[in-house]
Image (tube, rainbow, N blue to C red; front, side, top):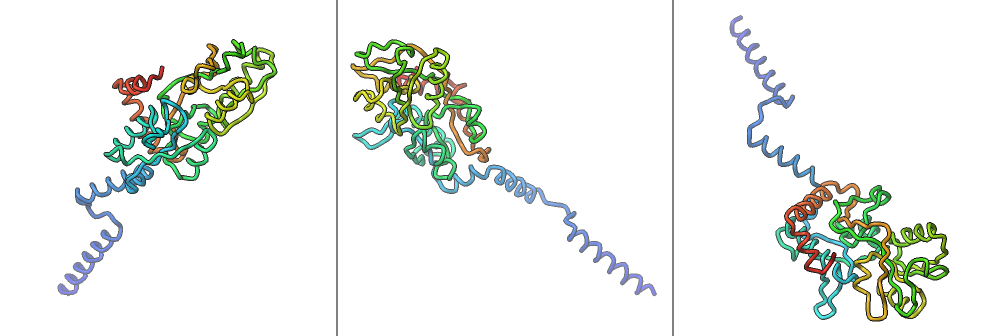
Length: 279
């Protein structure tokens, strides 16, 4: 009888041990806990992990905006303030600014390229608006500007009212047209718009007389002004540029926003802006 009781007790102990193991309530070592923590951390930054695994940061930039992003015909490299900003992000994330891969975008193509995953970020004079925030993540502003007007000196035009009945050239999908239309409605004048894919095309249209005004952010216009043109003093609709990412890539957005604010706090962002002669 004693032997039977001992056997039952042993069997019960074995059963309880097995049940404990199956229920997952067994103690976890500190090493295992650390691995679990690392795994959770990794899973909370899926976009950053993907970029690190690929070893390259793909950024959509302008290649036709002097001082922001312009292709150097002599070297074939794209240069400008926004390119420098992209390099800072690439170096911080991947340890090497040469791991930055840029892709030319326009106001019309930058959104779709971001949507389909061909690029990770857009740093391309992308104005932050409440409407756009419904579709994309924006960092805090890294540059502020305003829409302005450039006309031929010989036209004698000195303000928006002087463009009554005339045509203004703007970029496709840019915010310029809305800003100027609202101002024109307020002034009670009639204007027309022609949309172009690139800024050089708008400048060429102004030079040839197909449009009587080139309108975009003032800092962009400053790269196209020459002896035959003048930028008018009037400013419309403040424009704040933000680094842009897909709406669901929140980990990337938070990371980039941290870099932008760090550059602001250190004064480095102001130095980058000054380097390219931007005000």
